Image (tube, rainbow, N blue to C red):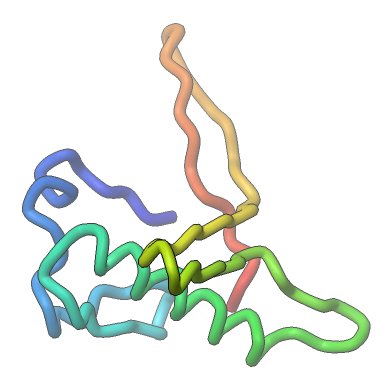
Length: 99
């Protein structure tokens, strides 16, 4: 389970910090903006999916569509979640689908 605090989201991820995505796997942030870091993480998820995808279990939960003419990128992700809560407060955490 990965938790991002408001503080870490405002400050972003320090480039080269080796922020862990999946257990022992880590990726280095290569940009200093939150937007760039989001794109880095989406790309890394695609690489991990490709490495773990098989004919029997194809993985394609993250799509990155680039519009060169408009200079934009659209990122779509479908991730498993776990819902919980106590005392009327709902919590949502990302589930694990990659190892």
